[in-house]
Amino acid sequence: MEVIITIIYYCLVAFVSAVLIYNFFKSKDWQKEVLTIIVVLPFLLRLFMLK
Amino acid sequence: MTPVIRKLVFSVAGLTLLVFSGISFYQSRRLKEPVVVSDGVTQVVRLSKYFSGVEGTANDCNVYILEGKESGATFCILGGTHPEEPAGRLAAWIFAENAVLQKGRLIVVLSANRSATTVTRVGGAYPPDFAIPTSWGEQEFRLGDRWSNPLDQWPDPEVYIHYPSGQYLAYVDVRNLNRCWPGRANGTLTERTTYAFMEMVRKEKVDLVIDLHEAELQYPVISTIVTHEKAQDLAAMVSMTLTDMEGFKMGMEFSPKNLHGLSHREIGDYSDAASLLFEAPEPFLDATRGKTTREQLLTGKDDFVVKAGQHGLLFEKIDANGWPIDKRVGRHTSSVLQTMASWTEMHPEKPLVCDSIPRYADVVARGMGQYLRNPALARPGRIWYE
Image 1 (cartoon, chains in turn brown, orange):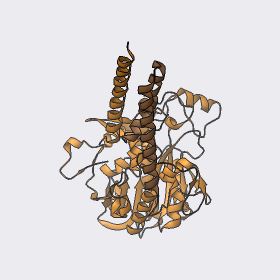
Image 2 (tube, each protein chain N blue to C red):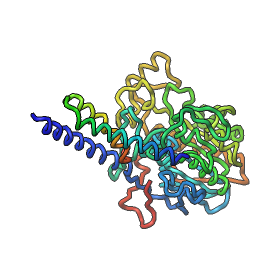
Image 3 (tube, rainbow over the protein chains, first blue to last red):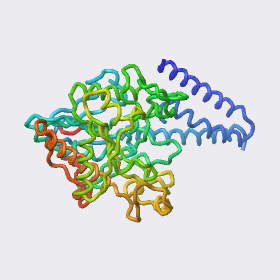
Image 4 (cartoon, helix red, strand yellow):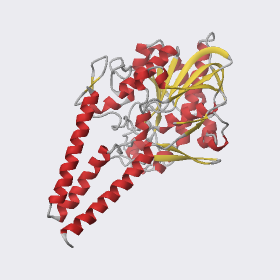
């Protein structure tokens, strides 16, 4: 059960990261782009199992 | 600047941050800590020898076994249950690198929750590591945290239900090694780790487990021995002798019967061994501390904690001299040595005699770095890494 929950958790992290990166490229407001970059960093660090 | 160039600049900046922070976290998690084992160490095994459920995990730690020429009692010293309480780990390090047993056996663990040594507290601004000065240079150690690394055990539940008592505990303590005793074979990584240690205690016929900790000065369980009722006479004798002879105060209190998951309760309840837990003062852990730096960790000096003491908010004294790491480590080495001596007085048929370990006054006078051995001079086969 623990393994399944962990896999689902990492799928969620990957999904949120992908949505954030998509929003970054679609955005036309530079402030939102900076915000998105800051927000996506911890998601990517967790996705790559670095932090 | 066109939107395309702007996005490119932001992407490069983000990637740069990702790469540099990622490298820093990666290296910190894998910092190698050398252990030049004492001549008294006769075996070094992995924890998975006792329970294969931790094999290949971050918590498959080294177990150092020292054996005397004559038979006697078997003690186990656990360092690194909470790695951000470094005096416990460092005192165990001194035993692994220096101790020579004359009678009995000693099992030393330096990274009881090895996973927790590879992470620091989120939002705590903890330094990732610290260094102890020695006569041959500095030795670096991972600082670590109180809980297992979320990379090794995640996500946390809404409520942590302790096994087997069924007691409800704080959700985050599902990753706290000292809330997961006696563990279970099919549980989380932290529960499997304590289960492996319980198997070790049973298979090695350990008589006494000593779990080395530190505590914030605002916590009432400080400068004390917490004892399972099986070891109450021993703990009382050690407490009185230390307070009378060693120059520092050491209290004693009972392990609460209705608070579960702690080593001083569950090891005694679920094995033939008795269990003790030692606490030394560590201002670094106090919530009212100032800057969370390596210097504060090692000197134990903090004006804000001193101020808290002036307002009567602390359970241990502190002044401008702080609580240096040498004092905290020396308290632990003396406490363990006194426990061995008092045990031997009380059980002459099952003695434990250990040489070459400095007492409190020696560690304070010379500095604990003097008892760390130079890995560059280690003989082949006598160096291990945590």
